[in-house]
Amino acid sequence: MESSATIEKVAPALVRTQAEIGRIETTAENPHFKARYIDLAGLREIVRPILAKNELALVQTFGETNGESVCVITTLLHASGEWLRTSLSLPYGRGSGPQVVGSAITYARRYSLCAILGLAADRDDDGNTAQSSVERKAPPLPVTAKPLKDIPNNSY
Image (cartoon, rainbow, N blue to C red):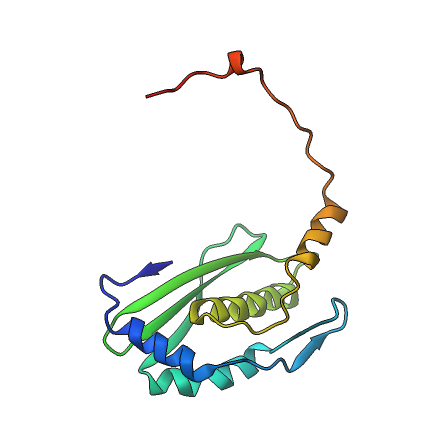
């Protein structure tokens, strides 16, 4: 995360914002993963007036990509000029075209918005979905070890 030189005003504004937002109720469902979440539009509808009340605004732009992923840059601005910024790069997934890229952008925007505000806006499955996906796709890496005598001694 990056920030302006000082965060004396943006930090307390963020604390007030988090206290006021409270729990986010999920409103949408992903039947493929049997998961509930709130969509980006619904999330922004909840947080925008609370951000404004605390002199905060959210800006989400795009960074450079390698042609296989999108990069969303999320900046939380305070009326004082102070700011907090984070970025998230996500792969497109299968396929190509504007719909695939747009879906990745929306997903990255929602997750980045939640992250910068410290919100949980979907069901926490303790990483089970991600782990099972990794286990299905990637074979285990071979374990190789060098004898200690073959490892250079870089003691200082």
